[in-house]
Length: 414
Image (tube, rainbow, N blue to C red):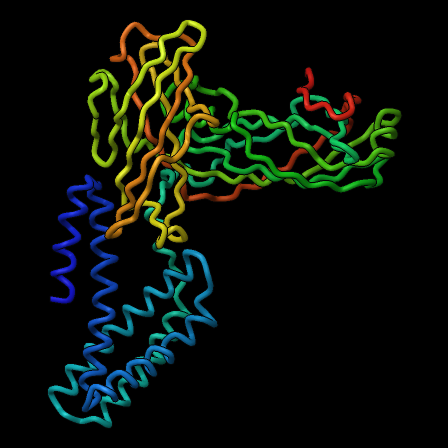
């Protein structure tokens, strides 16, 4: 009654929301596990105590004793949650064994010894647990692509000095090649040394996450990128100094750096055609509604509301399942895609109910030209997650360094 009945009630809601099979299985397992832990612990305490006050007191004592190793040894993040779940499952199985032993033998002393041993075993499980089974909910690469040996980073042109107020920067163009088809460069971090005549004179560090990375990732996900195309170019603004910029204009400068690439792995979750006109279109957990077309020649575009009903990205599970969602408008006939207009797009509404997130976004897609028919257009929803970090080295024995306009942010010519 305490496990199957909540699953039956919530399962009807999950099915009505259109969550897929993997999300349904995972949500059912999470709910069943949580209720099983509570029922098993309560059953053991009920078997070992003779009245309700003692049941409440010793239940709290066992909870505190079990929680102490988790606070000190489990840690945070997804691995900490995995350790917590493993420890709770182990303790629940011991609790069931204690309840069964007490009902069968009525030997309170032996049951109390088993309870102490069970608490120690649950704590040891939390400390020793190493497997992070929370990663399975995130998009992940195929095994052969887990570590891409073809990924390459290089300096693609000259550095440019520019200023932002009183601060000086060296803008360095970095080219990324060999990014796996299902991956996006979610973060690029550069730590580099500037040297004159072999003597290190300056160390700077900067990170970036540029929109061009995501555009190239979308092209690869849709199959629009030609084989061997670069994965994107980043303009990295490395902190610099005025005297260094003057010296680099007179003397040859060498640059050597370590580059950390944070790769996130993506998957296409749904594709919803817009040929039905204003009528709502549903595909699994996603619905497109309120479709409107702006056919003015000077600013054609499409606006719509996208609603997602999903067990991913829950507020309570955001640490376990961090997933970035991206929606694009696609014309597969012309092999074009359009990103939403940021200032005019944003969330409409959202609610989390019974382990399912229901959220709506208003999306405005500016188009280069209106297609002959809406049948050519579709909305593609992608998820990116499961980040891993790859390190590469870059260096330039003699880096060309040119001066830029103070305060300029213009891109340099190679």
